[in-house]
Image: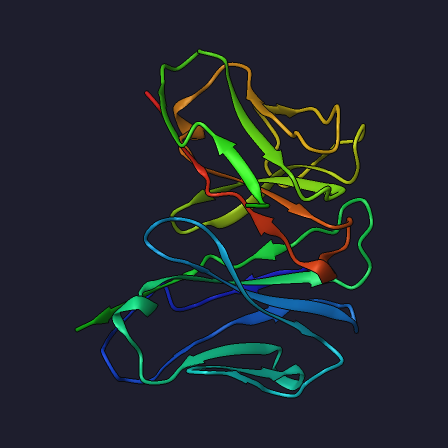
Length: 117
Length: 114
């Protein structure tokens, strides 16, 4: 069975602090995809990143960075020098390499990040 | 602007009433999905359609039905609404039925059943 766990329900930080959002996944597949989505207070879901399981290279995009470790089944998301605009719910998701009739994106329960000015 | 349009944006519905949530995409994506978002539960798949003319059940399909008469439209129907269906509903689409492409989401419909 596949599962995504985001143990942090809510995180509150002060602006300019660094913050890491944890994501742990379970799958028996050797090849799969991992995603992060952002849901700002306006409610829409915004795609942030996709990572293939066979590419463990970490990625940095501006203040955002992602640490993918197959050994610990984790795909953590770090925001450096957080800003108020980073306040949102962040979802981690898992997808199987092979699509098929029943293989759809599975989401974690989300982490609410509140960045205080 | 290309994307997914959901309607209505929000709705208050009396229990027992029938309701159809609309979803239209203009990206010519083959696959479409309906998720519901509930606090503490994240997003859960209700129904999906891998291509026009086909549909399938997701994790929480009871009380909902869908149809996919064409590529662009994927309406979700609540035949007889109950308070437990109070939720935010998201429609999504993907180029193909393959998670490697990720999903594009609509802006959601907030439904309250009273």
